[in-house]
Amino acid sequence: MSEDTPTGFSRRNFIKGVVAAGAVASSSAYLFRSTLLHGQPVAGGVERLITLNVNGQDRRVDVMPQETLAMVLRYKLGLTGTKIGCDRAECGACTVLVDDVPHYSCSYLAHRARGKKIVTIEGLADPATGKLSAVQQGVVEEQGFQCAFCMPGFVMAATGYLKTNPNPTRQELAHGVSGNLCRCQDYDKILTALMRGAELMRG
Image (cartoon, rainbow, N blue to C red; front, side, top):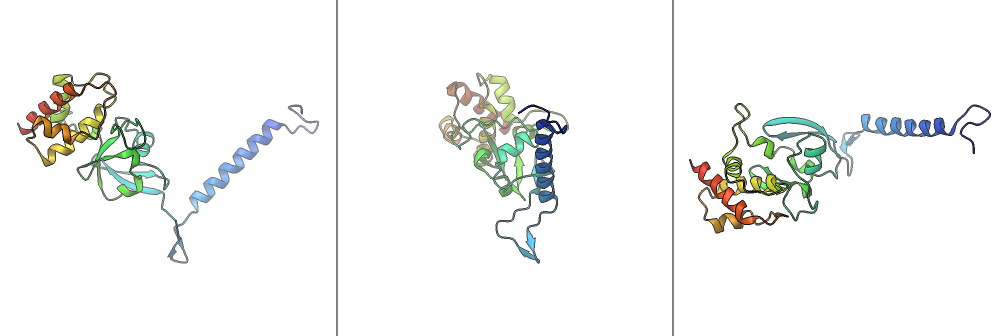
C-alpha cells in the first residue's frame, strides 16, 4: 500500500485522525465524568482531581484510582527526592511521612492520602532559611552514604522514628530503620550519620 492513495488520502493522515478521535473521546469522558448518578454514588466511581497536602502545601492533582503516592509525588508533583527502587515495598527508598508515620509510598495509593499531611525529603529543610533538618545535617557531617540512592528513604524513616524515640541507642535506631535497604551495604556509616542526626535533634 502506497503512502498516498489516488484520492489524496494518506495512511499517515488516517492514523492521525484515529489518534485525535481517541484523545477527544478520552477528554470528553474525563471532563463530563461524574461519581454520582441521579444523586447517588456510582459503584467504583472515584473522583480523579483531588487535593493532597504535601510539605505544608495543598496541591490539586489528577490521580487515577490505581496510582501510588510515589508515582504522583515524582511524576505529577515533581518531587523526585522520593526514589522508586524495588516498587514493591521491600527496599524503603520511597519512604515518606504520612501524618508523621513512615510509609512506603510505592505501595500506598494516592487517594488514601487525602486529608493527611504528607512530608517528603524536600519538606524537611526550613522553607524560609533553607536550613537542613537535624537528620539531614547529620548525614552531611558524617558523609553517611556511598551512592545515596537510598538516602532519602533512610532519612525519612529515621525522622519518623526519632519522633517516637528521640534518644535511641544505636541498636534501637538500627531496628527503627530496618525496613530500609542500602544497595551499597554501607550500614555502619549510615547508622553513624543517623545517630549524629539524633544528637543534633536533641540539641
